[in-house]
Image (cartoon, rainbow, N blue to C red; front, top):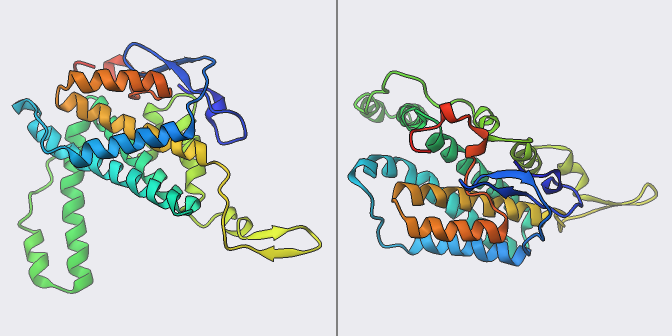
Length: 274
């Protein structure tokens, strides 16, 4: 789906051309957008979701919209937090927010694109809510709260969401998303980078570092811009917003950001209409 040049190394990141559905196809030579352009795109996405007074949709999409909007909104707020930390000089601390934004965006793409994905997500949400409040009741030692848990909506029968990495691999082509997620995770978990990034010098003299210089700011910003594109495409479809789809199509070409991950899903596994 993406060329190898978009991986986390010193190469200029150049993703692939898009097909007619907004996905990505074979790699081609493009001048990459400037990081400032990606920042401006992310700001545009934040403003659109934050400042819209209302969304208009068909009645048939209302329940689906209410179920999925929270994932869209959280993705955008994570992107907002990412930009704010970057502006404060905390790029390496912003990376976990980029990872979370990508995780949310990939999840909602899987849920929306795959046949039966919305139902599986609904069942997962219902069960997760029950599990959360049961654990909270135990943590707070509140019998009254535990009694309220029993009154919550029971989990419908059927499959729930698979593990996130399974969903990512269902959609990924060429392991771009998996590689990106792996590299972003280095700033989240206790890894070798927790040692090496705080040490400087050479074999003769080692010194400790507090300030951090993150070497892959462009690639991380691209991942956040991609997450914003993914969730706005979902919004445009849920609200039947042809105007927004046209805007996204132009931005997709200009910034080399695929609008969706449909290409990774065989036609027989996609929801009707995609």
